[in-house]
Image (tube, rainbow, N blue to C red; front, top):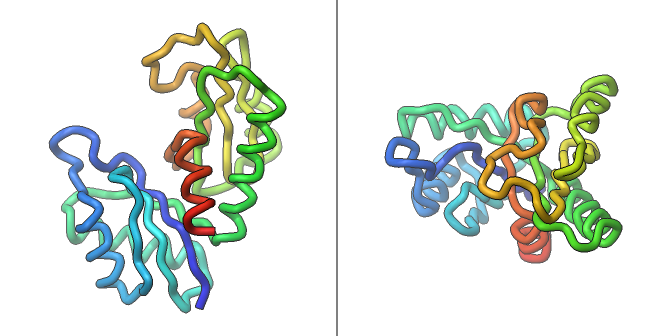
Length: 178
């Protein structure tokens, strides 16, 4: 049975979008998925299912999360192989850009079209560089970027449905689950 990784967007931010990892695990199991594990409390979950369609898996999870929580929880699903490639890109980009202050990885529900990709990458500037690879957009932030800004390169609004993780979390998840 195939194994997938799901990333929940905008959970555990503030008092109104609370979704503890034990509850996430319970809801994923209630959909019939097996081998469910979570990692830290930012909406990372691994599971197995006989379903093959990423869109159907995302829809099933989003419906179950909304029913349980009372608010929408956009969910981005990757196969283990897809996520392994994201982690390989993280390692490659980090090695090619030594001395980064931060490396954020935006996990995208859909890959951007060619012209959208160019627009996203054009947000690069003195604070850092955006690099799009498939369904991941990498914010490579240089020392001196305005720390504390949620979207220092102003690229997030161009990405569609997405959630971000640090390169450290992506690497740890790939080592743990892929």
